[in-house]
Amino acid sequence: MPTSLAFTKGHGTGNDFVVVADADGDLALTDDQVAALCDRHFGVGGDGLLRVVRSRALDEGQDAAAAGAEWFMDYRNADGSAAEMCGNGIRVYLHYLLSTGLAQLDAAGAIGIGTRNGVLRMTRSDLGYEVDLGPFRVDDGDVLVRARGLDVARPGQNVDVGNPHVVVAVSSVAELSGLDLHVAPILDPPPSAGANVEFVVPADPLVTDGVGAIRMRVFERGVGATLSCGTGVAASALAVRAWAGRQAPDRWIVDVPGGRLGVRVQDGHVFLSGPAALVYSGTITLA
Figure 1 (cartoon, one colour):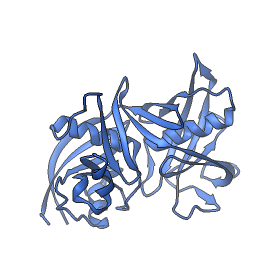
Figure 2 (cartoon, one colour; figure 1 turned 30 degrees about the vertical axis):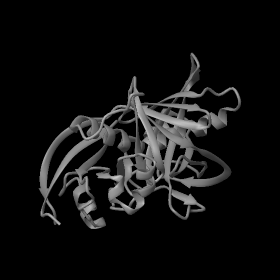
Figure 3 (cartoon, helix red, strand yellow; figure 1 turned 180 degrees about the vertical axis):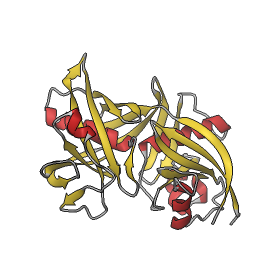
Figure 4 (cartoon, one colour; figure 1 turned 120 degrees about the vertical axis):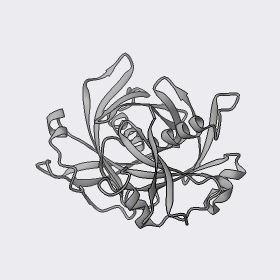
C-alpha cells in the first residue's frame, strides 16, 4: 500500500467525490482510510470516493467484464461503506475516464460502466451525461418518516432504482428549506439496509409543456445531508409521477441545492442526466 495517494476532486451538481485511479486493482483502502480521505476538515473532503478500476481486476467485476464493460465504478460512501450505485458519481466517473483518455465512447456515442447494480449504459446529453439506471420499482407500502423541521410524521414512498430510497412530500418550499437534515430522519419501520431519504415539493404548476418539475433535498445513507443525490433525484421524480396518476409526464426537471438534473422514463427504465466537473488534482498521505 503506497503512503502517498494521487487523487482528483470532482462533483456533479455539488455532490462531490474523491476520484482515485487504480486501474489494476492494487489498492485495498479500508473503510477508515476512505472516511479519512472524505473528511472535510482533515482530508480531501467529499460525499464519497470513486475508485477507477478495470472490471477484470475485481471479483465483483467479473460479470461486467464478461459483458464488455472495461471499467467498474467502485463507489464508497463517505463513511467507507460500499454502495450499489451513485447517479451523480457515475457521471463524474465517466467524465474522468474521457478527460484522461482512459476510455472513449463507441461508434453509437455510448459506453457501458460496471457497477454493483450491473452494467449501466451512458451517453452524452444536453445537460452533460445521461445514464440508464435500468428498471425501477415503486412499492405500495408506506413508511412513516420523522425529521427535524416536520411538525408530524409524514408517509414516505419506497422507491428502488438499484439502491433504496424513501420519498416524502412536503407542503411548500418554505417547509422544504426549513428541514434540518444535519440530523438523520427516523424511518418507521426502519429498512434493513437503510435508505436515502428525499423530501420533495412539486412546482406550481406541476407540469409545463409536458415536463414535470419538483424541488428536492436529501439525506444520503452513509453520508448525511448533501447538495444533490442522482439516484435520489430519479426516485423523487418517480414517486411524484406515481402520485400524479396516469396522465403524469415521463420527463421531469428536478432542482436540488446544487443545481438542476433531468429525469425521463422510457420502456420501463429510468434515465438520469446532468453535468459533471473535475475541480483539481493532488496527492495526499494516507494514514
